Length: 256
Image (cartoon, rainbow, N blue to C red):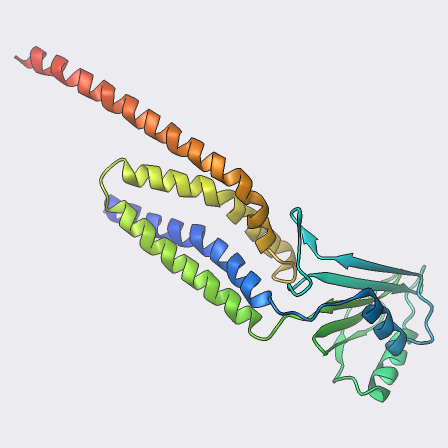
């Protein structure tokens, strides 16, 4: 019974360890081909939707995470933020945006609840445009929208990674020592840090912020760490094996 439970635990561990980087890889592949957002295009959209509003500040950010810059066609590659109404939200902007969007032929607006008044969100030409309000400021946010099939590709990547991990750990568990211990330790050390940070990022931001740059930045650190782990496990195993071999003649002579 204990051996069976240990095998199930190994399979689950492998599914989680490889399913997480599979999810990150799927989100990268599914996020390729987003519509790039430029400074000029962002300011043009803001002027089109809120031509009479005076911005209190504008910020254009290029996608950057975990010391990795995203390509212009990666999902999450850029973000433009316009602030209005400081030191208090300007709720009249919601009516202005709705009126201008209708006259300019923008797609259907979706209500954004919360704050002192409701805002609006719309998606057009591969861009996601959102007007939201807080107690101190009204914010117009423009970001590239996720490509079609982004979520499905992410889930497929996670499923394929989990399946590969479960099969690999099941196969490893059936090998003779020290193969299971070395493989289990190596993969855990190599993948667990990235897995924990990935799930932390998903818990905080979901898939809105890309998680795959984390693995790209960790790769230079994980290779030497993995090699050191393999050497350490092998040295410990060989020392224990040599002690066991040295103790067997002593036991045999005592019995004799």
